[in-house]
Image 1: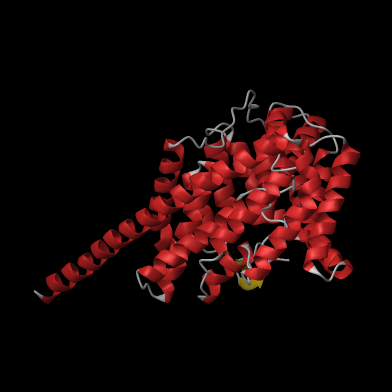
Image 2 (image 1 turned 180 degrees about the horizontal axis):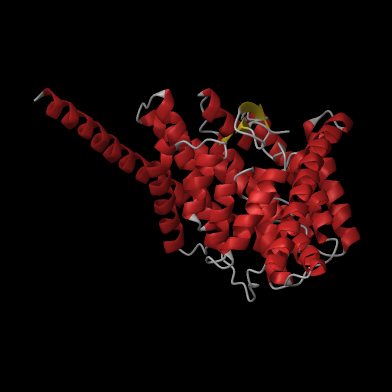
Length: 417
């Protein structure tokens, strides 16, 4: 009799927890979907306005000073994506003020031509929304970790239209080597809810069609693996460049207003020297051309420089979409030299580069499946495995924890370099 009561009590706990998380994560997903849709519209409109009005680039230093002032006035200096990831480890609160500040700052960065993505802002917006809703429900410190991941999932899914990737990425990115499976249902519900809302009101998912997928021969697999290894090395170069650029700019310009204005001036000079606006903004058009097999040989180098100066001088947005740009353009050129189809190798480069900088092989593989409709999945699986292994302990998020060693089965619990 007692055994039946115990089983019934256990079943009740699981059912109660399930209902609780479906309700909370659906609320986070709905809020995140609406916020993500608005953010998507604002960033797109800003990019369109910039494309139609070339004079906006000249206002980049002024936009930078406004961004620095916003962060100073709101006392949000130093609170970026790293702070959101750190909150999962330390149980610290993600302030609600993160949302409006990162929202406006990212739109300004895109409006005036800084080289940045939008996913960094999405993760911060999502973390802020999840943390706020968690506090409203008076959740404990363990549940607060889950709602922050839910928020990250929701905004990522709303912006990119890749809900499974969004959920897995949020579960995987903070602690490499372990995944918080208790957040599986919450993150999935939040991601699908947010993606459904943003998609329903016009936000288009990031998707590409590969015209050519090579046969799974030994030679083709070796060439794809070689390309993935090269992307792993490039991901290390990118991470080091970002961090060393940040150190250099802080050493040269102690004042944050002067630093961000100087960064804006340098981006203007670089843009004029290149004679093209391809390296301003996120660069999705360049990524699309690379997937079609067209890329400038040195484009990936210029994008690394543009992005490092933009982000490390103080402009906001994120590094992931620029990472797609770098990986796709490099893959298009390097893959062609190796003997692979240029468009297909651009896709391999994009996914392998993403995996290398975020250290999330499972999310990277799921991203490939969602973005490329499952085409060439075996090649992408190999590329993710190789890039994850050979990218070492480098990463774009300095508070990201590498819990389990990449070399053997032991706990190391170190931060990325």
